Amino acid sequence: MTLADKILAVHADREAVSPGEFINIRVDLILANDVTAPIAIREFHRLGVNKVFDPKKVVMVPDHFVPNKDVASAEQAKLMREFAYEQGIMYFEAGRMGIEHVLLPEQGLVLPGDVVIGADSHTCTYGALGTFATGMGSTDIAAAMATGDIWMKVPPTIKLVYHGEPGEWVGGKDLILYTIGKIGVDGALYSAIEFAGEAVTAMPMDGRFTMANMAIEAGAKAGIFRVDNKTQLYIKSRANRSYSVYEPDGNAEYSQVIEYDVSDIEPQVALPHSPANTKPVSQVGDIEINQVVIGSCTNGRLDDLRLVARILKGRKVHPRVRCIIIPGSQQVYLDALTMGLIEAFIKAGAVVSTPTCGPCLGGHAGVLAAGERCISTTNRNFVGRMGSPESEVYLSNPAVAAASAVTGRITSPEEISG
Amino acid sequence: MLEGKVHKYGANVDTDAIISARYLSVSDPAELARHCMEGIDQDFVSKVQPGDIIMATTNFGCGSSREHAPLAIKASGVSCVIAKNFARIFFRNAINIGLPVLECDAVVDNTGAGDILEIDLSSGKIKNLTNGKVFDVRPYPDFMAELLSAGGLIEYTKQRLAGRRL
Image (cartoon, rainbow over all chains, first blue to last red; front, side, top):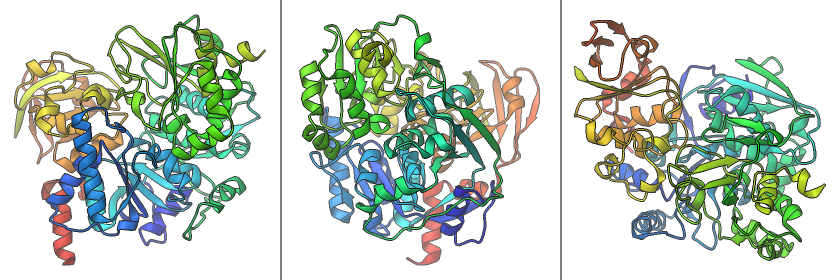
């Protein structure tokens, strides 16, 4: 069995599972946010149930439109907050929160071997910790809040193996964009991805979160890493309950095994309007930008901000560019402050915001006007994703985004630092 | 039996195109329906009639998990979405809320925008009334058929909870 099969079998109380089977699985954590929780709560009430199955296994995070951008979003956040208080479930208020997929691992709420379902497509981020984590809709979350389990079709697993040692400015974001560029936005449709190879073994946790995060951008149900010393070190100070580490069998059956050599790849940029529309940064051409967004559940962690500071420290954001930097959680924000990164950002002329999904989905705090162009460390560049349907979003790693903020056009960090 | 006119789209229609995040500060289906498909087809809302069918090629509904997308489609009067395949979260959401979604290559390859389709969900037969062609859709797996016949995930879960006497 693959890593995904192993975790699912245990949660279905089965010896084994195989792809295509419908199973019912116990869940270890259920997540919703201020956009998806209101529908989940409405459907939960329709079930005629008064209490969630276990308040310690349900968490709600206001992050999409919070701090609230308008009355309608404030009403939604209020509905979620009141439900959370009434049910005694975990809840993180503005000022103590983070973008859900940065926050939950940081707080030790998701651990290896868990099954986590979230009413947010980027729930797959937790695969970095050896977790089977997958996004679902609000009605799924409503049912699971009542019963503690959920139906699932066992996915086939695609194994992606990354060989070689990536260059200085190439990280998790580049490996996953490169992969999506190769296999397409439906290249892993209905499948689980198992990430492997020496390039990901050498990768720090923050890069692994970035890769797992964008598994959904290839259509995957989950994107999972094996647990190693780096994972153990990450969770050691965070976990406050037991967990189980699973390993894929040596003879596990994969629907595909794809191998990449990443020694020579450049930082990747996804051009409008698809994450699969990738090019090496040197081949993007002369593209002027109006805005830079650095943050999100994809690239809002401390390693990302450190990389940005390497570029921005002692430099200035181009006079015609707005550079918006959003730490992924209060902890990331505080760490960045203590390390002097925030000072470097402000001196460079960047906006630094409280954690929010905000501009990533065109919600607030950086929405684009018609004809405007943004380079962003986020995960999607669909038509109208960040605002006007006539705006454009380019996706990149944090170093490319920061270098572009300085020059005002899409730029390789090599050009700046060299 | 469903009958309606086809609104046809291509590959990778994402949930931002179906319902932009600009409209996600509300969750009322009727309100969401006012902006349905706006990102890909500005005229959809003015031309859609009750019973109409949305058709696309591959990976329909990719991107965000927002259930607002199938809710907006359902509330706009669409009776069924047909594609070669769907993004998995969208597919799940549609089944859960009782919006029929069918996967069939042949009907997509042999149907044009504006054609009228007649769909018999119980037998899996689709007839293109415009060109007379008839197609068989793969039946739903047993579990999913059970879920649909219960009336969606909420009704199915109610039955399960009643059985458990929780």
